Image 1 (tube, rainbow, N blue to C red):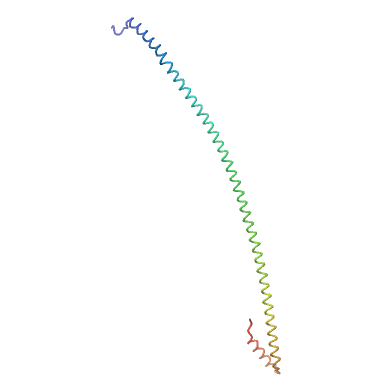
Image 2 (cartoon, rainbow, N blue to C red; image 1 turned 120 degrees about the vertical axis):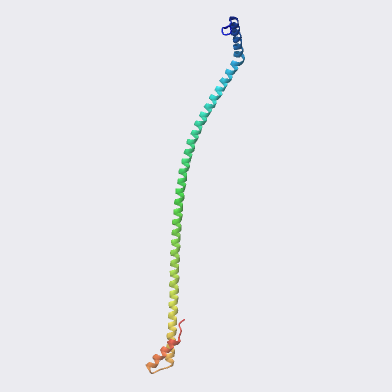
Length: 164
């Protein structure tokens, strides 16, 4: 049973050696380990704080980006609206200009038709006058006493004459 019960001398030496080991560990190991743990804890806290600040900054940037995107969409809508108005205005002006040009062309064509119609009527009148004079001349040259012969001669002359 000597192994189970500690010897008082061994117990004292064990306490002394344990105390010396504790002092050595405290001086050379415990303080540097605690310092390293404290430094590590501070660096983790700094990293967490930096991450929180970065998260806040990113959220602020997101909000700012969304605001910028909303403004850009509004500007896009305004620009598209203005472009549609300009397009409609240009189309209306082009239609109006085309209508005016068409009216001018129609009026010019009417005037040309009227001029050509008058020229044709003048030409027909001239030819009728020449024919009348020609017929009267021939009738006068041949003095006919018989009206039926005169009528026959006029009919023959009319058939012979071709209108240009």
